[in-house]
Length: 112
Image (cartoon, rainbow, N blue to C red; front, side, top):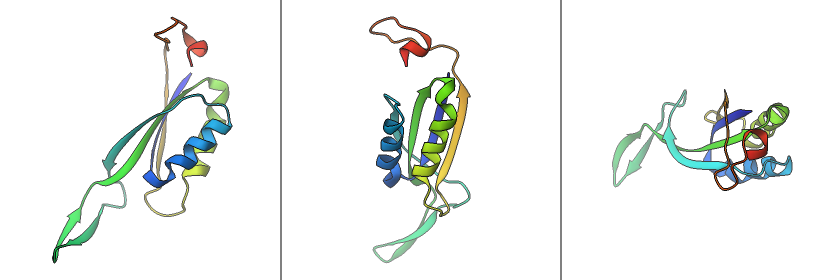
């Protein structure tokens, strides 16, 4: 089992959710986060004063998948989140040692 964490542009969230649902992923967790990478933020004008926005709004998606679906999920996220512009985000994959469904006590792949 793997935990896939993707940091994407917020307006691509529905596209990514749909892509994952279409391939059979039953649940995701989304968090609104702020951050920057190579973009380094941008400047904005507010009431005549210019200021730097260092941290840009992003959506953080976390999804646990069985090993058999990892590559398919990565491709689905990458394709759905891609705009071709700087700041599209990153995808991280980490190993999951154990998963337990609290309600039923199921463990491992059955808990996903």
